[in-house]
Length: 156
Length: 295
Image 1 (cartoon, each protein chain N blue to C red):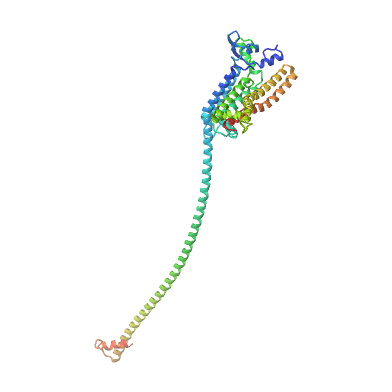
Image 2 (tube, rainbow over the protein chains, first blue to last red):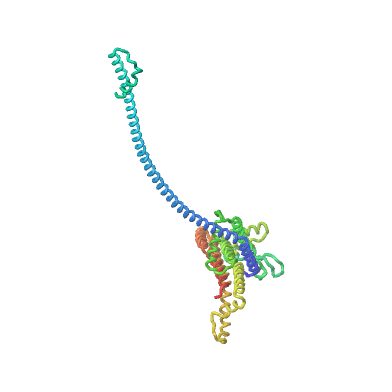
């Protein structure tokens, strides 16, 4: 209970402890706390930025999707148009081709008929000559009557 | 305790006597064997137990916090670092709340005050006879001392030397910063030109001594109330523990009742030791804040 030298001793001890605390204990812990505070703030800011970016990206993705859909529709419409065009075209071509085939066939038929007619005419001529020679009972010089015969054939 | 033949008064007195080392009136240096001898030593004596426990606890405090400080990183804190950071954060909040100027000394000072006083107060919760009995046994067994002459006070804050030592250090800082911030003129003016002041030079001259008396008393009251509040609370608490401890020699019923009382008082005392450490810290901050501001 007596006041004595302990007073001084305690004062000095206290000052030394405070000095040590001020030099070696407080600053590192405080620095760590400040640094962590900054880190957390940075992290939160980054998270917010990320969320914002994600929102933007989502919007962009939706836009792209929308555009792609539209494009697809366009392509589909175009394709359909083209298909019907092709069908129409091929219909036309087929019709024309058919016509042409018919015309060709007709021509051939006519040709064939003409040839048959020519042949028939030739045979009739030779038949007529044969008949005439039989009637005249003599040999008719076929060569001498060639012109006559040709005329006859032409008249048939 | 060892001296079973002691009366209650002797028991209490023995518990309230510090282990003192100093110069005997005959000129030799040594330990005081009684309260009278300690008193005769006068100022040139030192309380070994007070110094021992306060330094030991202070070193434990600084060692543990230094360890936390060395490994402190901005990453995830683990183990004791959590606790150290919690304390630092708590002190920092208190300092920011009451101290408005900028001074790197105040926060570490406040932390040292708080944790150190708390640890010294905490020793009050150790049953009052354990450590003194151990000291008596060690003294008698290894040093051949008379057990009745071995004094061992464990709670440093029940020694006014410890509380006044801290309060004076704080007071010294208050004076230092008052003069540093306000200048000698400003500080003297603060002591003499308020609360009463007048335009009239004659009346002002009369006011100066009155103002000085008022302001000087309030200035001196700061360290004294700071020291006595802590000392008084801890001393009274210790005394009650000692009184309860006397009941243990009064038979099994009274002893059991004493045990119950001790438990209750110890639980209540947890509040007191924390509160007293906190009050000492807060007042230290407030006094230093006042030293930094004109008012």
